[in-house]
Structures are given as structure tokens and as C-alpha cells.
Amino acid sequence: MSAALKIQTPEGITFSFQLAGPVVRCLAWIVDFFVIMVISQGVGFLGQLAGIISEDFAAAVATLGYFVVSIGYGVIAEWSWRGQTIGKRLLRLRVMDAQGLRLQFHQVLLRNLLRFVDMLPAFYLVGGLACYFSRRSQRLGDLAANTIVVHNTKPTEPDLDQLLAGKFNSLRQHPHLEARLRQRVSAAEARLALQALVRRDDLDPAARVTLFADLAEHFKAVVTFPPEIVEAMPDEQYVRNVVDILFRTKTADTRAAVREIAEV
Amino acid sequence: MIIDLPRFIAAERPTWNELEQILDRLEADPYRQMSLEEVQRFHLLYQKVSADLGRVATFASEPELKRYLESLTARAYGEIHETRDRSTKFRPVHWFVNDFPRAFRRQSGAFALVMVITIVAVLFGALATAFDEEAKEAILPAQFAHLLDDPAKRVAEEESAKHDRLDGAKSQFASALMANNIRVSIFTLGLGITFGLGTIINLFYNMALLGMVAVDYVLAGQTVFLLGWLLPHGIIEIPAILIAGQGGLVLGRALIGRGDRAPLEARLRSIGPDLMMLIYGFAVMLVWAGIVEAFLSQYHEPAIRYWQKIAFGVFEGVALVWFLWFKRVADRSEEERS
Picture 1 (cartoon, rainbow over the protein chains, first blue to last red):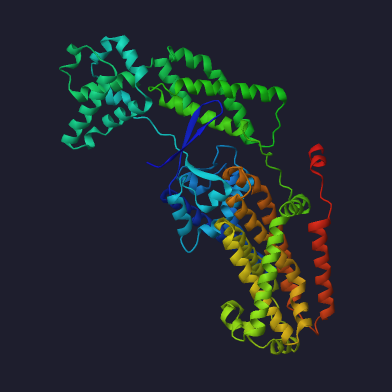
Picture 2: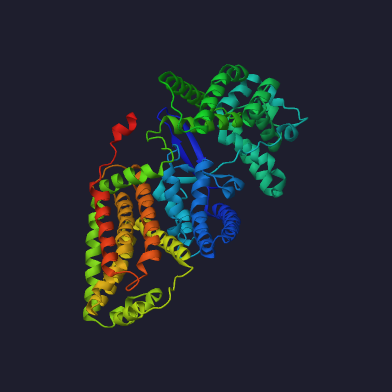
């Protein structure tokens, strides 16, 4: 899991950006490299057309064309597409201001021009190392321009209806304890339990038993349900019921509204 | 704690939609100016969405809703808390004649340091060549191997040339010079990321080479040829490289931050616009220098008189000094009023 940059607003609200590491950025750069090659070929073709006027002029167009495309592609794409190039779009990355503010043109320009230093001595070694060791995964160009590269993904939720369908949940017989569970369990704990359920078939049998025993013990400590309900319930079933309570609270209307918002 | 989630969503959704529409408009047109009422409404909506996010953030069962409100808050935060000028429109002439000299003058301290480095380096190169015959061969890189020969011999060859060696290749030569010089200058500026040290070393080396070549021609009695050869393009090209060095030192100074209590991010943020203008300025200068070098500097007597080339170079130099130091630039407040 890559690092995250948390930003706290003066209003006391915190939001975070998932920082992109050197490997995924390298993949985006490889895509962009091929895009630059294709555009340069196009410019070279235009240069050949200019050769009708003069061969000297055609060669000049080809030389300057490659230079301008190799420098200008990143600058123009990132400025026009709010921090994205074709490679970054494919890899779902985005360049952002390091403080979460609006990206300025001089930032886009500086980070792209400093590639000349990041490329040293070959294959972006300096930039890659800087990115790897930097707290905010910044190459030198990002550091000078005060920018970061973040993941621009929208994770999809697992299909809970399929995951939990058809199972009777005896914990729901106690609505007040059910409400207390929702109130006390944090978002991170809920997600952990959900992930354990989603990946349960990938685990070794022994690890699976231990994991669900730990989770069940934890949730039992958060809210105590009547012993007659939980005593005979296997740990995995207990966790499944907890996840059912935490994630399937919505009425049909609410679920549709949330889904609609998430899709916007 | 939200007791009734459907009611909460139904009540707050119009607010979220309204904020989203404003953000879409702002992002589609970054030059859009909002009225005072619009700004107040925008701020109110931002605060309401922030408050909603605060309420949803502890609600484990609504990850999609939380992510949606987080992204809305992050977008609005970027617009609300941004205090820098909105990006100016594409005005290349205005940038060059006003913003470039303004940035140059604002960072004149760094340029003064660059001048000191240059003088020391040129003197070093000159003295090394004057007192050590092997220095030139040891220091000159392979690309300048043609300068290892006797200057008098080269001058004789150039002046007796019967054919134009750049015939049919002047544009290509000019474009190669432009691309190479701009690349080298950007690299010089970029080395400022090493706290300015890389820029200083790079500048020192290049200026030492200049001193070596210059003194070599002077000692060979070819001063007039040297001036006629270098002045027309060098009077623009060398200051352009020095301006790149100036940018590198500005970057290095911001990283070091000595005597500046602002945090690193704020220091880097403050120099960004000036660096952009310095880059733009030296790029334009190097385009001009490339054209002059390909179309004028490579021609010598009897094709063109040396005094004419020297006079042209002096004229360029005077114009450059006037442009960078003395030309009146448009007043910021006048620009904003207009």
C-alpha cells in the first residue's frame, strides 16, 4: 500500500491523497515516452512536407520539432488536463499541488523541465531514487515545483448482497446493540473486517481460523451481545454478521442515492 | 452522529450538487471572476460540505459517500484557499517585455553572484591557458577539439575559405544550436536543486572554457577575429546562460532558506513565477542567439567586415543591458486596473 498525504483544512476537516510510488510512475512515463515518439514521428512527417520548400528547413523543423514535443508534451498535457498526461490517465494518476491547492502553470513547467536532472545519469535513476526515499514520493522536479503525484482511482465496493446474501443474522434481534455497534466501530475496523471476508478463501485454513478468532474477539469486546446468541456462533459467522450490520444498514432508497452520488 | 441517513442525504444533496456545479464552472474556465455574492455563497457551500464530511467521516457504513464528500471538499479547498494570482492568459510578448525583466531585477542578487562566479572562472581559465600549455588540452571537452589547434591557423583557413560550409544547412544548424543551448541552460538551472552547488560548478566550468578560448586567441594576436566571431551571438548567448545560472541559484537559495523563516513549501512557492519568467526569457534569447550564430557569426572577412560584426554585437549588448536593467516595465497596479 503506498503512502498517503493527509491534508487538514482550517475547518478541522481531514482528507487524504494516495501517493503514487516510483514503479507506477515509471509505467506512466513509458506510455508517455511512446506517445512522444508517435507525435515526433508526426512532426517529422510534417517536416518532410516542408522539404518541398527546402531540405534545410525540413531538417530544422524535425530537429526543433522533437525538442519542442519532448519538452512541451508533458507541460501542455498536464496543464490542459489538470495534472494528467496520457500515461497518467491510463495509470489513473494525477499531478497535484503538494498542499492540495490549485495547480499553477509555473509548477507544471518546472516539474517537467527538471526532468533533465531527474533523468541523470540514465533511466531516471536520480528521480527514481528521490521518489523512493522521499516522504511524499517526490522526484526532484516535484520537490522544486512543490507538486505530488497521486492515485486518481475510485475503488469499487465488493458486491455485499452476493457476499452476505441469504444468511440469517441473529445479532439483528437486538436493534439497540446493533446501533451501538455501528456507533463504536471505526471506518478502518469495518473495512478490515470486510476485507477479511472478501479474501477468506485465499487464506490458509489455520490462518483463517486465527484471523477470524481475533476479529470476533475484538468486536465482542466493542459491544457485548447476549451470550445465548454468540456462544454457539462460529467466529467467522460472527464477523460476517458484524459486517452485515455495518455495511447493510441502508434502505433501498438510501442505497440507490448513495450509489448515484458515488457514480457522479 | 447521523440518526436518519436517508433524510440526511435528501436534505444535503442540493448543497452538494450546487457546490459541484460551481466547481465544474471554475475548473472549466480558470479565468472566470465571481461576484462578491457568488464568492460568499461558494464559501458557505464549502463550509456546509466540510461539516457534512465531518459527520459522515465517523460513519463506517458509508465509504462511497465519504469518498464523494472528501473529493468535493478537496476540490473546493483548492479553490477557496488558493491565494496566488489566477493563471494569466497566454501573452508571450507581454511576458517577455514586462515580466521577464521584472523577474530578472527582482532576483538581481543571484545574478550578481553569478557575475562574480563568471569573472573568477574566466580569470581561472585565462590564467591556466596563459601559464600552462597543457591546460587547454586537459580541460577542453571533445566537442571543442577543433579549438585545440593554433588560432592563427584557423583564422587563416576561415578567411581563405572559398565555399560557404553552411550553404544549405543554416536553418538546421541554427535549430540544433537553439535546442542544445536551451537544453544546457535548463540543465544549469535545474542543477539548482543541489542547493545551488551543481549550478555553480556547471557555470564555473563553462565560463572557464570561455576564458581559455578567449585568452588563446588574444595571445595568438587574433583579438579582432575573436570579437567578430563571438560578439554577435555570444553577447546574447552568454548572458542567457548566466540568467539560467541565476535561476539555479534562486532555486538553491530557496532550498537552503537561510535568513528566511518561511517554510520550504512557501519559499519554493514564492519563487516559482520568477523562475518561469527567467526560463522563458533565456529561451527567447537563445533562439535569437542561434539564428545570429548560424547566419552571421560563422562568416568572416572578406565576406563581412569584422568592425561591422563587432558593431552589431556592441549594439546588441547595449540593447540587452537597457532592456534588462533600465527599460520601464508596465506597472503592476496599472496592469490590474486595465
